[in-house]
Length: 135
Image (cartoon, rainbow, N blue to C red):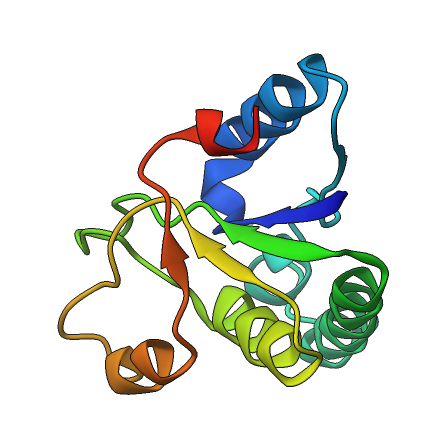
């Protein structure tokens, strides 16, 4: 099985660890999104147009990754003070996976109080709680 692992980019190390853990058992291949930050192009260099072009490229790559994968795993850890955080890109990937009839997994429960909590619930993701679900 090919599993796309996604999370907030601030959780880069957790994504790499998840990839290593899942692949160490030899049953699955893991795809990760590009793990480079580009906010400095907008925030420090003031080039909003280039930043938007890069975000567009990354969005297309994320969609292609969902298409290539057999399943999607979101590492929804505590982030920005929100327990079980699901960011915009992760939510977008969840919707695409759902539309393509691919299983969607969350490491932790669905977050409460996010603007799209109800939409996440409507996708019926499976909460796994531990990485060894894929072992």
